[in-house]
Image 1 (cartoon, chains in turn cyan, red):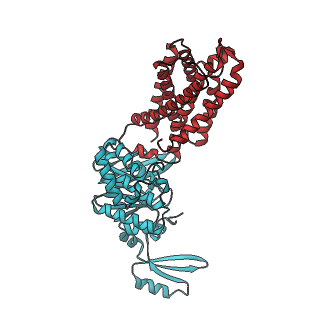
Image 2 (image 1 turned 45 degrees about the horizontal axis):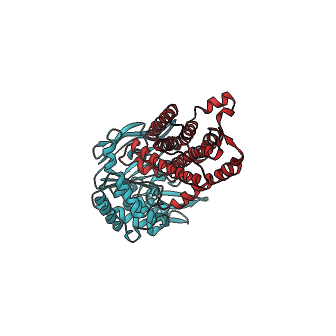
Length: 279
Length: 230
């Protein structure tokens, strides 16, 4: 389980993360959704001990992140936003290096590397230099690397950023498979679709604060599950309704240029903050 | 290193070869230094400076790129290894590169006809010199916040040391004030020591102590810098 208690990070006068309280249970895929600068990456960096919190605390499977450093490091796997594989090494060497850093015995790390290369469908490229890999292959290898030492919690920072739709879906399948094996997955994203189709629960962050928390369905119910979009003097207006019938009645009262559709998490974000996720 | 060895080897060959041709063969034939051959005077200096630039660059540039550009440093920071183990690994990698560069110059120097006395102390001093500049590279890489500033550090600190620390000429020829500043710098003591050893005059305990203190200080500073990077 991951438990955040008033976790905060301040850079001078800027409050990057303002006292987060959150619990994530075993077997859950949890998504932090928000625009750039919302505090998602800072939250993950604090939980992975790459950034020291200014206040509060966090427990990962019972270990406190600032006190039980080495225990937490064994519990977590991290897939950062930036591609940080060693490009001068092969896929297999990257995995084995990670195993060595985690003090895995030689035979064990060789076996685990082989298993994981099959798991992420890169077994046939095991001996190729990573510099020759596509973006999707590098991301899959980074996931394999994070899993080398059998972590119980996996952090993924923008796991499908910059990938084509096909590569993105392969990453999602991989995340679902890992979660199916009991792993806690905490990911950050600014892709609405990713949060909706992948996450059991989503926390929406804005300006360092968690402004909404729930399943994608619960969050959409907060604002209304059906949206009527209409053009008014060149501006798009959004009206939310609990059901399609009420939406149809309202749409009928409008002259033209009307769209009726299901609400998504972006609508929730816009409604709560007055801004778009990409802003 | 295995995959880039040929490139590394060739790059380490170029500068000392030029120094030896220009200063050893060209200029050196018409110069006597302390009653001896100029080639034999400058070889220890070239070894000291080449070990310095190779070790500093191997750790400094590599680690700075890893921290600011490739972000591969994060992989080590989230692994259950101590800051001192991480720094030691990086520094020893720099030492290996510095030692290879030094050996290349030694071989070239013998091919150019230099007569040098080599013993265990000589190799220990080269190793210590590589160690301290690798550690300085680690400190700089962890403290400096851009690649430009890393290059500036090399320009304003490493480059002047290369030419002024008794590598190509004797410090007695410099004004006293200038000389006393240079006498504090580690490369000066590495040059003194290597020259004294290769000319058969033996060990200079004070210079050895200065190098050891610099090595300890830079290594400790590098460990602290890695711990504070969070």
